[in-house]
Image 1 (cartoon, rainbow, N blue to C red):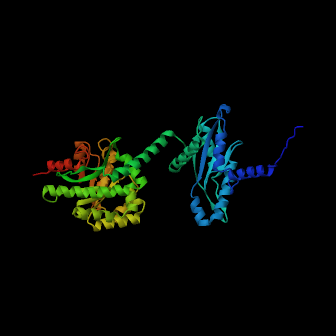
Image 2: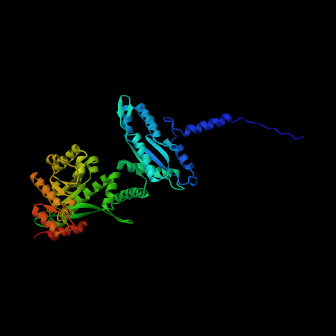
Image 3: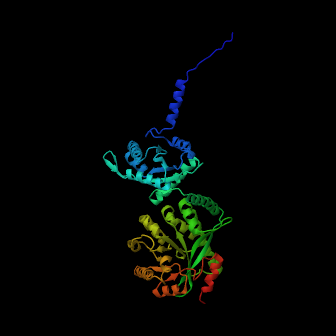
Length: 451
């Protein structure tokens, strides 16, 4: 007679424990919402082929200023705010929408759409409306702003990629001040900026950038009063990369400090080399641009002092050009920087005057020697009476404050003549010369020198 032995093992408790553990792994312990892992799993579970004309989108809601609230009021108050914030968010959603806490102060929302981008933006608007009212914490009422980024789901898209796209849109939303929908073109531009940052760092390390020098002409005598040093980058594969592209990248990444120091030393060394070739100090100066980031984060006076010492130049041979924004961002620091530069006998110029937000009080208080009139006013002078009026006003203001003036963007003889007649001291622009390499700049100076 055949026999068998059957053993039964009750794994109910083990299975329940596994389910409980998995549920814990997929839930945020503070708010009780799904966490980042659970959220991406829910995205992956969506069956696009079965949804008909229904699409989906991921919204990332980033709570702004949360760290400040946490620091000033404590972590318990921060936790209370997160819980209340999550409840508010939940009230803005429709049936079938999914809310998750995907980061410390970041929430993800998975919404269904029938009208694509229109519905997604409508969802963002509903969220902003319910979050508009102040949050009550203890005896305080706090208004919490948020940045919302959206990414529309496409067939066969990876869940993590979709989530990252929405996070990228959040960064755009913080800059724009309103909800932003992910656009591949913007992402490719951001990737290009990162690529440029990497290659710019290498180019600086290998000394692959050059300084070009644009002449500044004395409008009365026609001689070269000085040169403005301008960085140029000829990439071995990409070709010429415009300063309007790599300078913002340098400022954003902090490379502007290294770039600025390099430019300062290279400009001073070039001017000293011109002196040696001429056998005497040339009656001209070199202007070097300083960004607001340099003023805020670097010891500008030490950089200038080092450049003067290594080149053997005196301070009056250098002009430091600062934009209005470098003054407005931190007036107290700007004052210290200006005073330190003047102690080195350097000339200080305010670049792009008239396009920023500087107070006239700064002009009166700070030791500014030169106002550079922005090209946007100069180029319009021959056709726009308002531009002429603005240039006249700047010239009068500079004269009253004992400052000199330089006009940018002079591209015709008519502009040069008009500005000279109005009393502008010097000018630069393509009418006179484009930026030149060091050797060509020296030859240009010689060609305009009166015997």
